[in-house]
Length: 321
Image (cartoon, rainbow, N blue to C red):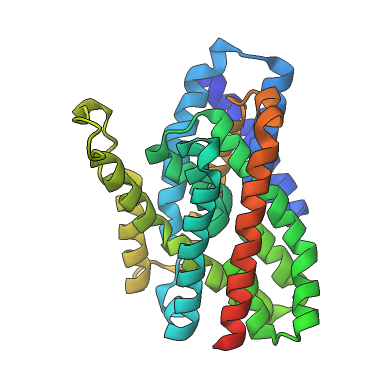
């Protein structure tokens, strides 16, 4: 695995540096772009395959698991039931509608698009693909769509907030509840001010909490045969609760108990970004760019409709409550 892991390490460091210099371009997005570029220039190199496969599975899932330590449940709960209800309803409706709109693109891709739009962008796409079982092109198309739309949101959301006269706290809730990537949320909040940034990041992490029950629910759904479809082969069934989702939930609880020192939390944030960046590069390195370009338009349209719906629902909900 050594050649592939060395390649992944170099790409992850580059992604980390670029992500720190350009806040809107998170290390996750830079990672998958570098992977796609590598595959396009170098082609299929069997010598790198074992290391890339390890990063695409174990490292990526470990990164998703460590996200649990970034979630401060007490801060999320402090927003009150009305705001949390708005976020939950908007996410649920957007997920269902986007999934339905994307069914013509295939079951796996529609699930990945719905998850990336409604919950937390690239990391959610990667996590849900463990049960959706899409191919690399499905993953790349979903991540590309949410990245493009999240980048557009950086310019659009401040205009919407200005036109509607949203307060800083309301603007933060809308940004956190409707923008796809954490890095994009940080870019919006950083430009708008400290209150917007703090509120937006906490609300965004509240959406990340929904990742665990979603993966578990989809895992259960895939294990239950559809009526009339015949028995499901046991070997083909995904695990009911993937190991990294169990770890995610455990780490959320550990963080809530307040027993983790601040230096450890800071270190876990760095480790999470590095692991996710490594996994994203490995995903990108398995992508055929021509296939993504050929099929990317419909995916972008479905994700765009879902993103517009999520923004509308969260904005209306915030104005009402």
